[in-house]
Image 1 (cartoon, rainbow, N blue to C red):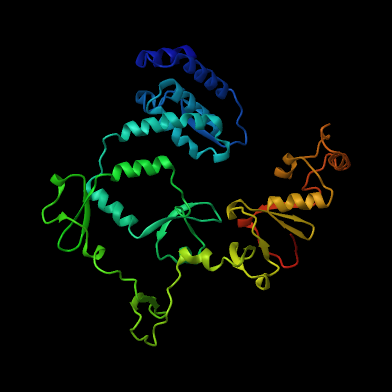
Image 2: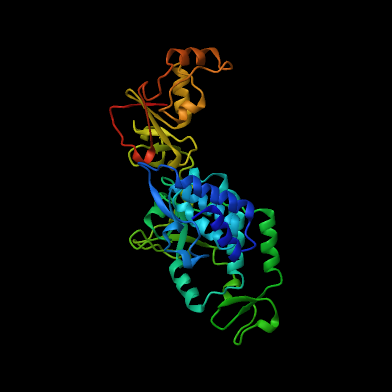
Length: 392
């Protein structure tokens, strides 16, 4: 079908369409129709979207073959043409474009997508059944971060990976802004504490909201003498139980005088040790100097999922900082772009490069770091080899 026919069909049904982006969209479709996609991943795209023009969904003239990137751009142009629910369709296209290649289009579109989601959810209330299901799913769980992959997910509070320190709680170390503190303070201001005969504590905003069976006050545990004075903590290694007992009470054989240190005490207990990366287990460890092995590398402040491993002959270099030190030590100075792409051929040096960089680039012109014997991988795909010498 000709471009003019598409224009008449669209403007007849949607007179408020953005004509500027409509013409750009149809010109782009013409370009894709005549493009050769040999040896490329392709998808089918409806020129007139099914959600807006369901009557033309099976027409052959309404279907065009496009590349993944072209499909992504088509839906961006459609969103600019029609707005509304077409932004949702564009939002779904992020599945075919890698995160680092979405570019400025997706970032600029987020405000439209967020606004539509907000309008769509305005006034929507969860049913009691959904609330119970959500409560059941998240009860006794916390959101954690896997330092090796950078992914976030939920685990039980007693998960051994959380206790061992392999996973990190998302909220650990989070500091609220003054604006957030002010909002929380205003929200809680004027609340009235109420308690029933079973010492259940609730808060209401006015006396008229106090439920039957409750009265203004605090639970009994808030009154009376302190439970900490003249007591100490006791811990049972067999059962994992811990409790406070009176100082005058005798200690039985199963109990020892201490408190079990959970994950919150991890850094406190290891404050006198240094942090190292274990290249075998791919985790961070706190060690004394006499405990350090050949596969331990000093911590340099980089999360595990961002660590790059470099190899040159029989030398192993961990992290970008150490890699730069290694190149400087061996008079192998290069601009940053060559350190990111090991396949990039060394070109003529820029006039502003220093003398050592120019000499090295001229000497190794038209060669890449791979040609010079360098290899690069991330920590997740790395396997330790005891024959390698670790560069520190």
